[in-house]
Image (cartoon, rainbow, N blue to C red):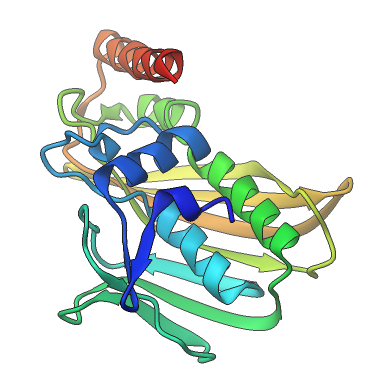
Length: 237
């Protein structure tokens, strides 16, 4: 199981260390958001890792929706309930929820299909910055704080035509940004293709915090810094 290095399970709980979460973000998702760094002041487990663990445990349904209700810190014990219900939540031992899942339609637990879809989505999801977000922010004249670049994963959903495919690829169809003061709500729509045909569609929602007036020099510096983090990490592998 390719997710084994990125979490631990004991006594019915799943825990993710800062090192495990950071490695997943960088090595699987290609996501170098500093909130996923092990030494971050407020480390946050990548939402895509929680998404991946859900698919690994429950399989891939034709229609699924994921809504993040809290940010998971390092070492938090998470309960993934044993259930066949169409809706469930991932919570900690106090009952605090972090992820709501809704699912319907046919389900596949084929390891190859599940891993292929997981990797395809996570690879797409992790490339949101800078390729998608920077042009959106430039268009609307706003940008995230370069000293504390907060991009928060709010949720995603998808609808598959069938489950008879392998190695899907996700392609961006449309991206929009709605600005409200210092907050920005980003909506991404994507297509899911396999074997030369479209097999599904999906959407992802993000929240940008601490918005300020767009500055080309500051944005260029942030993009260069982000690229430098990636080069430095990959050079140390």
